[in-house]
Amino acid sequence: MSKSLQAIRGMNDILPEQTPLWRYFEGTVARLLDNYGYKQIRMPIVEFTELFKRSIGEVTDIVEKEMYTFEDRNGDSLTLRPEGTAACVRAVLEHGITGGGQVQKLWYIGPMFRHERPQKGRYRQFHQIGLEVFNLDGPDIDAELIIMTWRLWGELGIRDAVKLELNSLGTSESRGRYREALVEYLSAHHDKLDEDSQRRLKTNPLRVLDTKNADTQAVLVDAPKMADYLDDESRAHFEGLKARLDAVGIPYVLNPKLVRGLDYYSKTVFEWVTDKLGAQGTVCAGGRYDGLVEQMGGKPTPGVGFAMGIERLVLMLETLEQIPEEISRQVDVYLCAFGEAAELAGLALAERVRDQLPNLRLQVNAGAGSFKSQFKKADKSGALYALILGDDEMAQQVVGFKPLRGQGEQQSIAWDALAAHLATCVVQG
Ligand code: ATP
Ligand code: MG
Image (cartoon, rainbow, N blue to C red):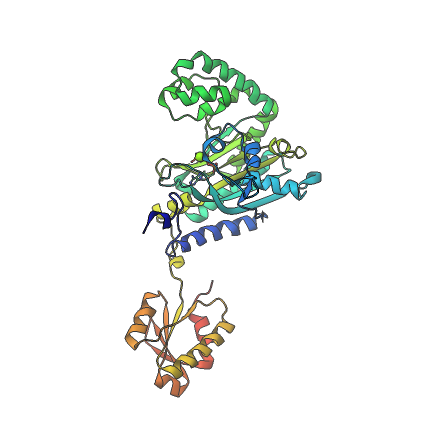
């Protein structure tokens, strides 16, 4: 196929054989969030470029080099959203739903776009489930977010393969004092820093902590630690969070170098990381952003949230072989009919059964075919049972009921009794 007719590099089709696992994952998360009282919000995929510049920060990887930005036909600069928080904050402000201290517990799901180097677990269109809570400023809600994800890993069977890393960036005052100390220290070692870090030292010094460069990492060993600069308020918040995680029994490691890529975080930051996916090890990341809403023109409004990468989590389920058996079977019953009269009777019968068993996954053979070919299709569909309608069955107004997975002999069931019979042998979701 010519290149111009292929998908864009780093933007993937999710094929029918993969979608059951995606839907299982998304369904599990959605149910869990419902149960904790979170409500879904849906934002547009495109926003004004200015929104991301203002919220994410000009001196971040995303805004500097990863955004898909283009001019609209009327000259506006628009950007495909690289993350969800900015749009979510814009939406709650625009609709006034966080005004007067109203608490909002929101989640969203959808594609995000970043022009990164595509590799395993890193794509240019990827998908996130994100969650934002507004107007709660205590460590209890930070803990709830982490507790929910911990439960999710348990339900998915991947809890043993992830680790929680935790840090506090403090209030903006304490972060300011820390930044000064860090800049002073790093400036004294300027020559030993890699080029990127030298640049960041001027623009966004905390990001130097995030470096992958070994020489810079060596310099950082003796650098001042954020923990020593936390003010009482930040310290109490962090202790409150840790006490709650301890109470529930969630293990964590403190990582003083965890600063997150975005500018807007304060106090709590966390990442769930795994060593099962190679270099792309963070599956879920988030933190508190008490200053963001105000920075975007709203009243001071505390906020906290996280986002998880669906591709990486689906990859983990595959890697750890945590794929529930029932999700790969998509047909319960397959109806084969031979001859025109049987086909018509079969159609009507199938609709009657569907009326009575709306959750039954019943596939009616299409394309006619011989006994042998229809039977082959029934088997290949993965169905547990085949229903057979031929001349004999038509004459007696019955249907042949044949177990396909080796549980018993074929029997005849009267048309009127079919739905009741199916209800006893097929577990319906
Ligand atoms: P990373 O350090 O891996 O680049 P990030 O800090 O840029 O991640 P966030 O902006 O916090 O990521 O996004 C939250 C989650 O979304 C990440 O933990 C990851 O699981 C997922 N994610 C981020 N970028 C990508 C991408 N390009 N492809 C696939 N998943 C991604
Ligand atoms: Mg990134």
